[in-house]
Length: 588
Image (tube, rainbow, N blue to C red; front, side):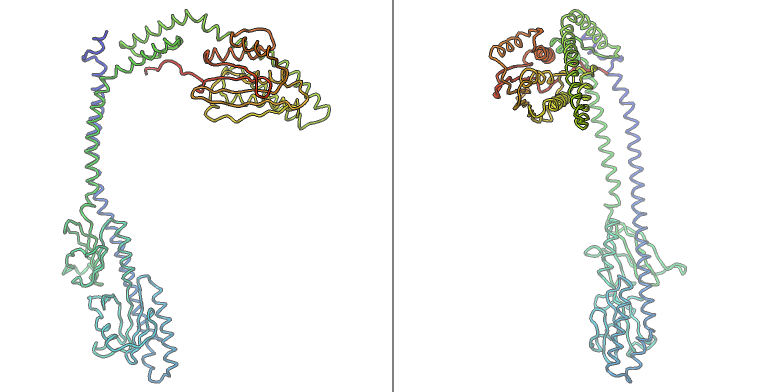
């Protein structure tokens, strides 16, 4: 058999699995590589289109703002308030001059508020050497101050001028005079370099590129998001007459550039995108392709090794089955649908355990059924007796018309009998069993009133999930009431506490009854140790002890001793795991 399992041949399961795996993986790998290259090219094209689209949008926005600012300067250069002051100066008093200057200051401030790109608005009166500025207010200036600004008009080839490293849109009035002749007044709007740079940086962050704004045909004034500013191509010398905007695309210094140039406004917007950004999708997809290749190789190798070791798992299932059979779990069954050698072994193993189980069933299973029969017998004994007492208590409450107490008592009674009559569940969690015990304590608390008190500690959450036989604690508590506390006129106490070790949970149920003699305690200890089943009054305790030992083994069950309160102390010992694991794994 060993040679037939391990021999390599074309009918081997390992061989078939490996060939099938390669037939599936290789087409998927080829398809993944093709998709990787195609996606990388598409991604690069999309990056280029997205950046060009964003550049055109920002260019249109900036062009609109500059044209609007130019129109504002032209409109206010013929404004009556600004134009009339220079003409009427000889006939105006100082008060009228100051008042007009203040009015002009108000108008200039209104102009500045029309656009975030306006940093300041200035108005010069050469005749009296006065300047009105939104930032500086009204102040005296020299001829060199306004003359220097006036001389820069149009020095960038368009509407925008540069003076002392600041951009201005200027207008003289009258605008057609000889530049050497002083104008009546000079109106200028200073552009906000910080705002222009902020907008450039916002676009650069969203597009992953460096943005440069250039004024002048020969790149006289440059604003850039990078330091130092990148090297730029010169503006195109000639454009077709029908075109006012030129779009250039070129490679320079390991970067890809988009350049938009407006012939009418003489400014240019350039986005330089490093090739590393453009090629990033290709690099990413290339790395992904190599990772895919490496992963595919690893998977093929791992699958090959796993295929050769595939015989280990079914053998392990057989070994675990034998180990559990040695522990006495002869009722297990390995479910399988194999048609190979292991299928034959599984079938023979199941047949063997089935025959063993048949031989020991009468001895082992009969003990369990005996315990279940005794549990049902105990329930049939407890339920009528408890029912009679409960109905009598309801009758007494009805006689005094205590409706609320009847409702509460009936609710507890319903919970109690619903739990007691649920025969389909032979085991419950310790939490459910404790809840049932608390319901029983609540019923007895209503019956006995303040004569008897109960102290019950809260159990740890991890212990509450332990599985135990049903009706485990209630017979012990009932024994306390029937034989220890029922006759006490007052001061009766029942206490329930928990003690934990590494593998055992002990539930201590004790009372302060005074009717337990040393002889009765000794007899009870002997009966619990010998597992005697009698018709005596403590049949309930012996029944619980027997069911615990059948379920969990000899180390567990009930122990009794004298309570520190003076009465009986019953220790319920159960394993902390609470349930064992069924035998075999399935071989799917």
